[in-house]
Amino acid sequence: MTDPFARFADWFAAATAAEANDPNACALATVDAAGRPDVRIVLMKEWDRQGFVFYTNRQSAKGRQLAHTPYATLDFHWKSLRRQLRISGAVTPVDAAQSDAYFATRPRESQLSAWASLQSEPLADRETFESRLAETAARFPDAVPRPPHWGGYRVTPDWFEFWEDRLGRQHHRERFDRAGDGWQLRLLYP
Ligand SMILES: Cc1cc2nc3c(=O)[nH]c(=O)nc-3n(C[C@H](O)[C@H](O)[C@H](O)COP(=O)(O)O)c2cc1C
Ligand SMILES: Cc1ncc(COP(=O)(O)O)c(C=O)c1O
Image 1 (spheres, rainbow, N blue to C red):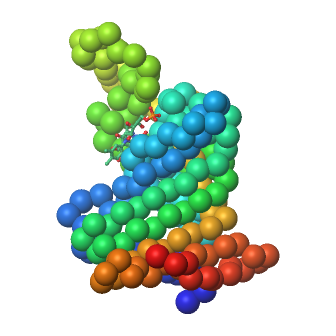
Image 2: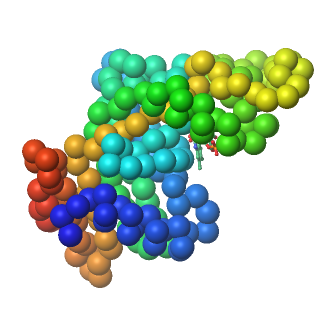
Image 3: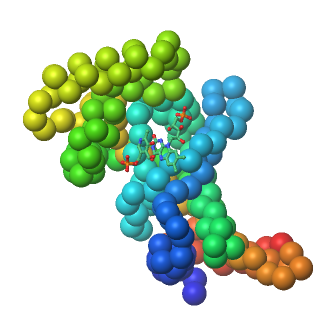
């Protein structure tokens, strides 16, 4: 199979069936303005041939890092399948309509949190956050609009690496590199 998106569909379906929770959880690696790496878990919420989308606060540490260096690598580890998948490429903001549509599916409490949380900024105490949540709830008694600073990012892959555990650490690694309109598949030593 030389289509990494078809391979992704297979592996993601298997992970969805096998994992106890969050088969869409992946590490998101970014680089800060000083060139240092950073990493945290996000949930991959949408994907197609254009790429893999997660949602966050664009003023967060990761948002600032992506504004400076718009490249990222995602790393899924499906423990029960003993599989790892890395996906790397350029990152672009998801447009307003798509971000609005996703935001509208979130529970009200999560929507309020997106307004009340100054993600990645220091928080003096828990009460400060709770009072910001209460103010936001009073401000939006009905539908909660998407905050302008909250939205999706799409990672458009340049390469994928599908890794499978094998006995004796003799793992199987398949690396797909974008090559013109298609993909070049090569094995890597484990
Ligand atoms: C399982 C799991 C899923 C998460 N998903 C997201 C997510 O989709 N978006 C998000 O902004 N933070 C998510 N978080 C929180 C992030 O890991 C992180 O703490 C937060 O985004 C702040 O990161 P930053 O300071 O590097 O920007 C998740 C955490 C866990 C453990
Ligand atoms: C702060 C934050 N934002 C966004 C998400 C994305 O998931 P959801 O839209 O399901 O809340 C998460 C998931 O844990 C999260 O912790």
